Length: 366
Figure 1 (cartoon, rainbow, N blue to C red):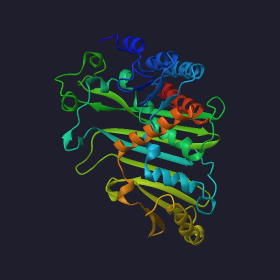
Figure 2 (figure 1 turned 180 degrees about the vertical axis):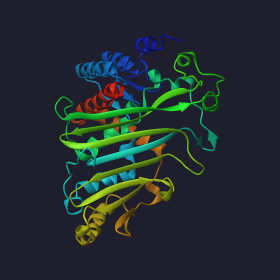
Figure 3 (figure 1 turned 90 degrees about the vertical axis):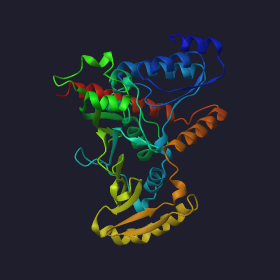
Figure 4 (figure 1 turned 90 degrees about the horizontal axis):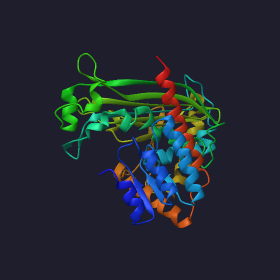
């Protein structure tokens, strides 16, 4: 039914809207709800191209005029290793200062690897046919990268407003496809054939080039960052989605790894920035972890060769689904407070400026 938005706005069954699903017209819905004076909790991404970004700016203006909240669901801020990485960055005896970095060795570098086909709770995943249409889902460089770009600002400049007009510079961006055969598409969607919208995109062998991979190199307040997202069709036997994030300080590098060695669970490591810092870190780290134990009881420091591993009890690894509840709790508290933290809106604008500007640059790069 095509009139669901109009009917919802006419009936107004409440004052908070949760928006998720197909991204093609999502930003239109966001603007309409903001103009109607409704609070919104929105699944990422809020927009998937430059035109959508301009519309999103208008939506934020409407939300401000109508004194309503507009907030996206950034679940990765609730991941325990990311939280600890951010905390340790603020401890000068351990981390030192955030380095400026270079294009070849950014201060913050993060990559996530995902799979279009996978097993979820013992069952093969089922995705809608339009999921592979990037005009509806959005390309990889504007979808999952939203989380990664969010974490760069959230960790490197905690609670600091970012002005996308002056604080961000996109240095390079690239995108490339994962080729999908008809049989692979059928396996994921349970549809017999590609949907009509995808037919004219097929190559000579009948494969769909799905632009789900991308990389963005940029600076934020002069600090170099790189985010990279990969979507393979299927993980190798025994494999799962992986994540990597390193933030470089003058005294230590804080590294999150989530690969086979970690049994595909995020683990946090602390590595000396230079060999001569190993001994000073050995002194500073136990004190730092001791102070963090007040907030996170049970975490421990474990020597691991030339580096240290932060042991995190199982109770903190609550899983991705639980993070949605934690984001919702934050949003509901903001509703009670009547406002978002001052830095949230400018940083949402900056985040989507990065992803959508990078997409335009990547499309123009051979």
